Every structure is written in C-alpha cells, then in structure tokens.
Image 1 (cartoon, rainbow, N blue to C red):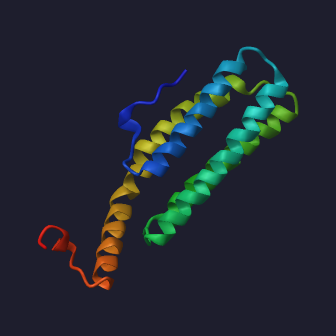
Image 2: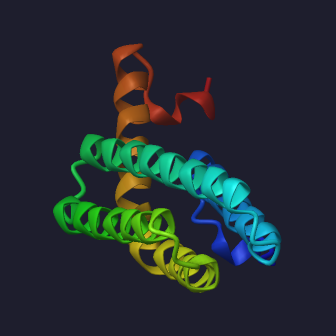
Length: 150
C-alpha cells in the first residue's frame, strides 16, 4: 500500500489532488489484487485508466495554456503510458494475471513521473500565472504593488 508523502506535491493544488486520486486507485488495485476477483479488478483498472486519461488531458491543456516548451515530449510520455495501461487491460481481458506486474509498474511510475516529469513544468506554470495576475491588475488600473501601498 502506497502512502502519500508531501515530497510528492508539486505545488499546484489541483494537480496534487489528481495525483492523490491516482494513488488511491493504485491502492484500490493493491487491496483487491490478492483476492483475484476479476470483476473488481476490471472495474478498478477501467476507472484508473479513465481517470488517468482525464488527468493527462487536464494537465496537457494547462501546459498548452502556459506555452510549456516541452509539452510535445510530455504528451508523448503520457501517450506511451496510456498505451502500456491499455496493453495490460488487453492482457487482463485475455485471461492473464496482470495485477502484480501492473501494481509494481504503477507504484514506481507515478512517483517517478511526479517528481521528475511533472516537477519540470512547475516553474513555467507559476511564471505564467504570475504574469496573468499582474496583467489582470493592470487592466483594473492598479499596479501589482498597489495592494501594499494605498
């Protein structure tokens, strides 16, 4: 069973929340993999894949908004991972026992992806958000520092 560690936070709350949700799916898989209940495993696997694809789409849209220069390679990492998940699903549907291998892959991949691939874009997102907030304040006729000096 994996536990969330604060070092997994990248500092973008919505993304951190989504990562925690993926970790919850991984833990659900861990809890039912020993039972061998294929219907429950199928349900968790399908939910995990659906949620992961939704998360990737959200993340890629965010990176597109901030003009992240490495978005194409980041998207490629996502596409490759979704392909691997779908390969596991196909093997599962053919009757193979994939639970242990899939759990090992997911538990290692998630943390590595968060701490390396996702951490790489944090500065771009923060810089863009700061620029956006400053532009909004200027549109209102206030300088960024006006809230400190009335």
